[in-house]
Length: 299
Image 1 (tube, rainbow, N blue to C red):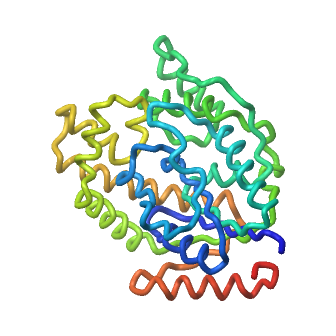
Image 2: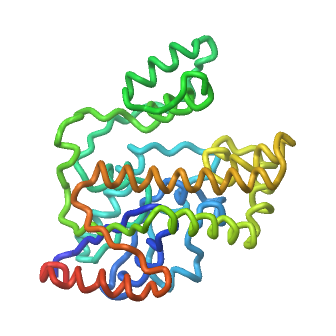
């Protein structure tokens, strides 16, 4: 029987992980991670990475690949992810791809051509803010980074060179390389923000502060790339209070969730969106199963 691929996307806090497990059981599928923070081995609570006991015996790939002290580019993810994807297809295994990192989804499944590049860490110390903003605009004229936000400009430019350059900015990048069904989870903004705030509270209850402090003391270079750590980093450095750090984590998580939805909605036009029923998530799962099973090629 031919391998089937189901892709689950959407903002953080909408239940993508839970849905992926349910569908993996239903269709005897393995899961491929498409979340950029879950490639790191050390973080657990801050990234809401699925725990071993939550995997329920389902094989998970493209997780726990590198340390926070290592580099891993979009090109690396594309190469490694497609190797696994193609192997599972050759083995006639059904596949669930799940995550909130839009570029990972694009790189894995679409004709998104990348150059292999050297690790960046370029020295911009002699650049003026105006020169940095010009570089950022050359990457994407629509970037919203303020000219005075020097740190973010440098991080943005470095990340671009680390991830590789898109060779063809044409409709080719929207061309599917694989046959798959694309499902999105969403909710209204007020509910989404309420759920992300609740998620942050739960993270602190689970030990986020202790996890962050332990990793802070190891001085990992990618430590502050993760929401939760970068705000607590300021607290550990005595720049802000713990309460303020917590407020910033919630604020930045809300902003991130909003950006995720906007990106998916604008960049991937063929998503079938489902509104999440937080009161009874089984309703959402059953609705999605019914949608999938209407397509005889996916059962």
